[in-house]
Every structure is written in structure tokens, then in C-alpha cells.
Amino acid sequence: MKLSANLLQRQTQSPVMTARLRQSIQLLQMTHFEVNQFIAQEVEQNPLLEFPYNDDEAGGEAEDGEYAHQPEDAGSDDGYDNRTEALSSDWYDNGGSASTSRLNDELDANYTNVFPDDGAPQRLDAPELVSQWKSMPGSGEGADYDLDDFVAGQVSLRDHLAQQIPFVLPDMADRLIAQNFVDQLDDCGYLQADIVEAGERLGTSLAQAERVLATLQSLDPPGVFARCLAECLAIQLKQKDRYDPAMQALVENLELLARRDFATLKRLCGVDEEDLLDMLGEIRQLNPKPGSGFEAGVSEAIMPDVVVRASSDGGWLVELNPDMLPRVLVNQSYFSRVTKTKDAEVQAFLSNCMQTANWLTRSLDQRANTIMKVASEIVRQQDAFLQHGVDHLRPLNLKTVAEAIEMHESTVSRVTSNKYMLTPRGLFELKYFFTVSISAIAGGDSHSAEAVRHKIRALILQESPEAVLSDDDIVDMLKKGGVDLARRTVAKYREAMNIASSVQRRREKRALAKVAGF
Image (spheres, one colour):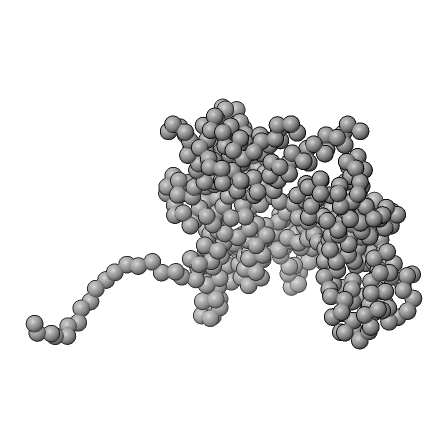
């Protein structure tokens, strides 16, 4: 066959991942805090974007002051007469805010200082920043107080220890070693450092480092500067003068205590069952994390993106949380005034800014609509859960929701990431409603994995010390309820919920029953 070179022209369509499309996808996956940060960056770069005013009245005053105020004509012949008439009329005005302001300017006096409640409302310097700066003039009235302004600062663990170190370590060299140890504490108060390496790095002897550490372990809170759990408990018991040989043997064999092997513990500690129960009661009263009582970081409350309420017709009302909706405005009037310039470079820049502003507003609107669609479909699918609880949670996957709202699975996955829904049953992440399906017996309706885990937890909580359920017993009881589950799956779910085995639970429940009987 003869080969030849030909020129062919063909037109095809293919999706292209543009920069704005990529940003729209990222915007859909962002949390509320990340969206606000992104909008703040766009407002800073784009002169046509601005934040809406928090108060409509304040926004109206600002707009009137910017656009409605016109400068006086200096060349007017009757300017003096108008000024005289206006000034004379101010003497007989009955407290109008505008006339009072002109009178203050003319007489170089401020009568609102005499009666602050009767004066004109103070104008906001920057209404869009009122929520961030509470001390801004005009941000609030005198009778409104913010409790955050009166809350004392939280003392950190390092600050608390730094106040005690000078009283127990007068030598400066010892304080330097102590400061190095303080810097290597974790949030729980445990020392994450090797004494030998610390001594070599600081150029001190091992004996001096151990002496400083022993002194630091006597500070408050009890158990701080421990290197393991056993040492933390031992420090607290020594301060209570309860670290006898029997208690020492118990602390040195915490792994047996975790396995609830009370028979071996009685033999190692040389005590009877009653004394061992008393020792376990004392161990329970100790604090395994002495540094947890101090503020380690800022705790932020989770705000729901979607709110679900029961409607009057027996259904559910799904709404977007207005406090979580990002807001941004496009200043059309400013754009129309500035584009009158004949500078081609300025017009090109403003046109680009307008396109970016319109894209941002459309993307935010599309983000809200997509979240609303996904949330409404989740509520429709999980109606039984909202009415009756976790036992009626249906198995659900991304494909089912995506097909119902005619979107791609990846879009649904991005929407459900870090988004929360407030329901009459509590606050849940949207991903909580997506669980795997567990088959039922005799061809019945499948069960949700989360609902099955809830049933396993409920069965274990209801068991008695004399009738502790094994994994096989749980499998049989689940089969009676129509759930077909293997024993290894029950063990996997039980371990994921941090529930001990039947042997360990039997020992613990019997010990607790005996403690309650004393």
C-alpha cells in the first residue's frame, strides 16, 4: 500500500481545566473560614469588590456622605447670605441632627458631649471591620458590653511552671536546664527528651540533669515532667504518700491492669481482692494527663452550614445558615464613573476587575445552591434517621446522591467535606450520613454500618457482670434482628469503638460491682 502525507483539519471538543474553573472547584471544597480568607484577598486586590455593611443605617449614612454631599460653590455671590440664613435658622431649630452638626462647626463647640444620649449617632469609620475591632468609634452603644473584653487570658502550662521555677531552683545554671526541659514538654505535661542527650547538649553532668528533673517533678500540677504514664502516676502517689511496695508493683504492671488480669496483680502485689480494689480506686482518682487542664490552643465552635427543622406539614425544612454565607458586593456605580476615563490601560484593568468580580459572585451563588441541593437530598434519604434515631440510618453512598441531583460524585464529595448540618438529632458532618451497606437476612432491607455499630454498643451497655456477651453472642443477637454480620466484623467494630473484649469486660464489671457493694 502506498503511503502519502496529507493535511487534515478536524474540530473536536474537550474539557479544559482553566484557572477560574480550578478556583471554582476549590471554592466549593473550602470551609467557611477559608472562603472568607479568599474573599478578603480578592477584595484587597479588586477595587470593585467590597464587604457589605453590617448595619443598613450605617451603610446608608456612608453612601449619603460619599455620593450625596456636594461642595459649595466658592464663586457664588449669595453664598454669604445663604450662610447667614442657615446660621440664623439653626438658633431656632428644635434639636435636628443636621443643624446641630452645622452649629457645632460654626461655634467650634460640641454640644453632644453635654448630653451624649441626645446627640447624633456616631458614624462608623469602617463598617466592614466592626466585627473585628470592637473598640472602633461607633461600633456600639455605651450600654452594650462584650463579655470577651472582660475575660482574663488563659495561663499556659509553661507560664505556670515558669512562675514556680525561681523558687525551687535559685542557681542560674539549674534554671537554664529547667528551661530546656520546659521547652520539651508536650500538651499533656510529659517530658519528650532524653536526659543523657540533654546533659551533653547543655554541657552538664548526668547527675545535675537528674537532680534538676527530680526538682521539677515536684512542681504543680502533680505528675508533670514525667516520661511515661507509670512515672506520672508514681509521682502523684509519692506526693500523696501512698507509694508503698504494693502500689509500686501495681504501677509497674499497668499492662496487666489494662488486660484486667486481676488474679496476676493480686499475686504480684501480695494483697487480697479487697485491698486491690482499694488500690484501683486510688489509681482512678489520679490524673494521667497533668497538663490537660491548661489552655493549649484556641477552641473554635463548629458552626453549621445547613439547618434542618421540622415543618408544619410533617416534612423537613432545609435552610442555609445565613451566618455562614459569605457576602461580597460589586460596586457598579463606582465602575460606571471610573470607566468614563479615556485611558485604555485603566479601562482594560477595570474590565478585568469586573469580570473577576462577576465570576466571584456567581461562584459563591453556585456554591450555596450546590450545598443546598446536596443537603436537601441527604435529608430526603435519611428521613427515618431524623424521625427515629441512629437505628434507622440508611446506607447511602455518593453515587446515589449524585444521580439524584444530576451531579458528579466528585462534586458531592467536595460539598460534604468539612460541612456540617444541624438537625433535631444534633450536629453532624455531612459525611456522617454516608455509610456502607450491610446485607440483611432473607432479602430484607440492608442496614447502615453506623446503625449496626450503634446496636452493638447498645447491647454491650445493657449486659450484666454475670452475663457478658461474647462476639459470637452478639452475632446471634444481630441475626435475630435481621443483620447478617460475621464474627470478625463484630470484633473489628468493637475495637474501633474502643470496647474491650468479653473477658476483660467481665473482669472489670465484676470488680466495679464489688466496689459498689462496699
